[in-house]
Amino acid sequence: MENFEAAIQYLDELNKFGWKPGLSRIKKLLELLGNPEKTFKSIHVGGTNGKGSVTVTISKILEDQGYKVGKFISPEIYNVRERIQIDSNWISEERIITILSRIQMLIEEMKANGFEEPTNFEVWTAMCFTYFCEEKIDFGVIEVGLGGEIDSTNVIDPLISVITNVSIDHKDYLGDTEIEIAKVKSGIIKRDRPVITGSTDKAVLKVIEEKALAMNSQIYRFGIEFNGIEKSFDEGFSNFIFQNQDYELEVSYSLVGHHQILNGSVSLEAVYVLNRLGFMVDVTKARQSLSKVIWAGRLEMLHYKGKRVLLDAAHNLEGAKNLALALTDIYNYRKIVLMVGILADKERQKMIDYIGPFGDKVIVTKPKSPRADDFRKVGEYFKEYSKDIYIIEDVREAMEMGISLLEDGDILCITGSIYMLQEIRKLF
Image 1 (cartoon, rainbow, N blue to C red):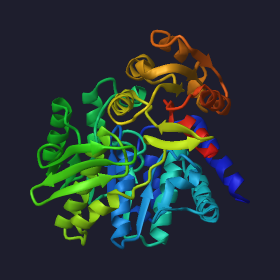
Image 2: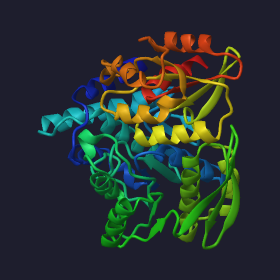
Image 3: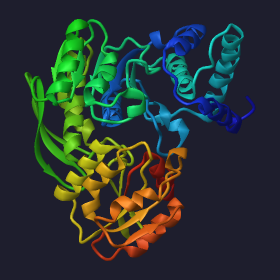
């Protein structure tokens, strides 16, 4: 592999067949690599929403306590290298080239022996585990890519499994109901390993509880074994009280939103359970780490040309609900200009029913994804809520239009797709 551009091109080529079910490809590839996933302790984080927030929060806590921590997240906001990090430092281009060159040869060996070619995400997973093995990390905090049970990350034997919550998303792959999706996501629960969940829906929780019972897995549930009691919000912090059987801690969490109280509480409970498993983690000190977590594009308030811009990665119905709550309760503004791009396989109408009432003016744009080719249809859903709707395909042009529409005290709220935020965040 000659250079980084060639490496990315190779990875992109693996994308052409999309997502494929099954763990046989990743298991074979990891076997040929010497099973690097078995060389480090791990925490596995799944769920529909919030799994990225919990992954970066647990990682930050462990880093601050002196551990060498790898984290695997997707999708990225800034750069593909962001997906694989150690102590919050991205993997280098050189290491991607070196590791991927080795993997490429092994893939050719697999194909010659009748194995199917691994997918793009499976190769990223293998690169991550190889890098973590070579760097001798203490902990790997691993975010599920899609679903859980047959996600390529589900080859690890984690110390703890985390299921943040369960709601409707990726129906083509995971199922049409929350119950079906919960069954897939609970597939990351491992025998005799504890599981922590933020799910509060009774039917969903029953699925997770039944799986935990079948796997002899101790379960820690938000609102039962632990809790987060909301105190106040501002534009920089969510303030709450974390409670469990041993602690009552006042917390200021640098991720904003009602939903982040759950994510912060889940993260603290996870390190509490690590402590109970015998690992040196100071839970009281851990709360200090929550005030320093950085996670781009999650109710992130920025300034552009002197104007306030709120970026939020809400890309499904649950995310739209959380954004609507935040716009109602947390932020002060005169009016909101909404800039929205939503992929075709999302519940567009239902999402817009939550966020539409906030848009004094609306700009509809096209996220960088083949699943957004019909992006103009989104404008039709907004007609019930706004008379001023602009259709601008280019994301940067759309943002400049949004800025030009703002008056003193207004906010430009950009939301609907992580792919869109990837383009927007480069402007700051």
